[in-house]
Image 1 (cartoon, rainbow, N blue to C red):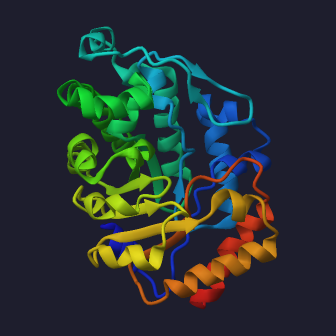
Image 2 (cartoon, one colour):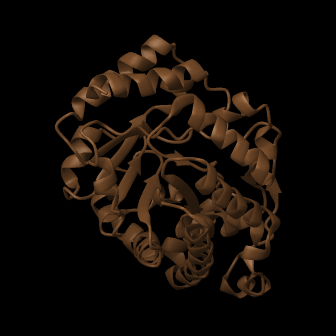
Image 3 (tube, rainbow, N blue to C red):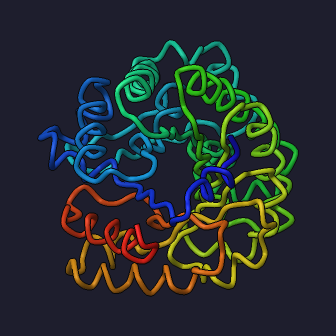
Length: 327
């Protein structure tokens, strides 16, 4: 199935919030626990599926998994997203120490793959997984500022590092598909700092290679104001673009082919996490109405929701979508 077929399979709007982290309120695990333990992650996901009944469910969003598997230093707060703390790659010569590592043997990678298998077996809806984007992984290895400078000062060296990242990401993505992933979203937030030409050179063509190698519904997610690269995101062959709340969706969707799905983009923090349920409902209905004439749209959050997001606000968002579509 293609993503456009999923989006239009029934006569109602699909709603797929990116809500794995708030699920810890239901399962009573910490964020750190669901990032390490497959059982904790599956129980959290199952609780979300049962409570909210979205149209699809994604695994927890973790932009440190692949970097951690390569041996980079990662900080794991108890109830916040992890962060990569060390950026040891200064040039392509530094890749040698990482080239011998099989990331599929890493404990957290194995936990995410096992969680995917169990989610697919026990949750009756399409299940999505995540991989990091190639330029973003290069940025984790080099440092984001260093990667941005290399795009200008050392493009050849940067391409070697992005090439290395692409091979590892594709290997993990294929393993997620084999484990049962119906969708794979490539998370390329650092791509937003690139100019259109740089995006094509250091991200887009590598994203395309990853998507071409995955037999599943492929989505490209970029945070922030990505307006300047939306047409080039379409060139990657992504079946869907997941865009943040900085993007004017009714304007942006006009740039997409009709068979590419727009996904988003309720503000995950200012709106869903920090507003009242009624305010979330009103914002949801406003966005849904603005996108009502576009069948190639899935209602979602602009990015993943913080762990502390009130559960009643998530319910308000989902119920608003059901109400608007007459479901």
